[in-house]
Image (tube, rainbow, N blue to C red):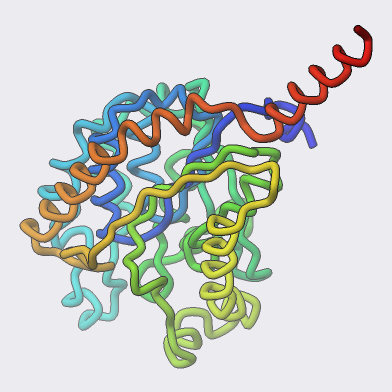
Length: 304
């Protein structure tokens, strides 16, 4: 309730969707848009989109292309060879360390723009969005990037957490629930739709948690509901979306630097192309605010 009370009628939420290595596209879009992070009250992220969100808030988005292309393509981050040795393919400890090596965490966590990061609580199968702070930043990033089966899950305060994008792929309803009536989404999800996972994969990922497996099953429905919200938003809501019109060169676990760079560049050009549109969107009052002004005008007419 306290968070909802802080939201003003014209505050805007930015949602960055999960997508693995495809999210170099999101970093490119943010660089192409050239819009201040102060334009947003809150940024919702999940999985690998947490890194573009953090660098963007810290004013360091220009550094992300090199990180995606040179650092995150390293076999130290992801390697199928490790699985042959009985280890996890993804090393989230190294991932967070290398991705945040140059990040001003203090600035990212103490900005007027709030960074919210999703994580899946494995025992209950529930996804929660947690505000990033200097105290929880490292563990929160490791949890949201703990891709099921590929990475080791993260223990925090007696609970196990996994990838925040396991269920929540397009959490527009979360922003709406929190009180936002202007919502911008930047998504790397291709026109084909969201990634889905079969029963065997679900059992291997969460053998002891039927609740977490159910969260995976809700993934597609969650995405479809998000798309429907964007297409037919509630009458008091304004939304906008920037997403690729083509299938991106990079896929979930792509390691080829040239594909990652090409994906970033597609995002950059899309950001430039949408710059005027998004600036107009941000400078337009919410429908809720417009209704309030209309009601005031009607009252003034009656008084006269």
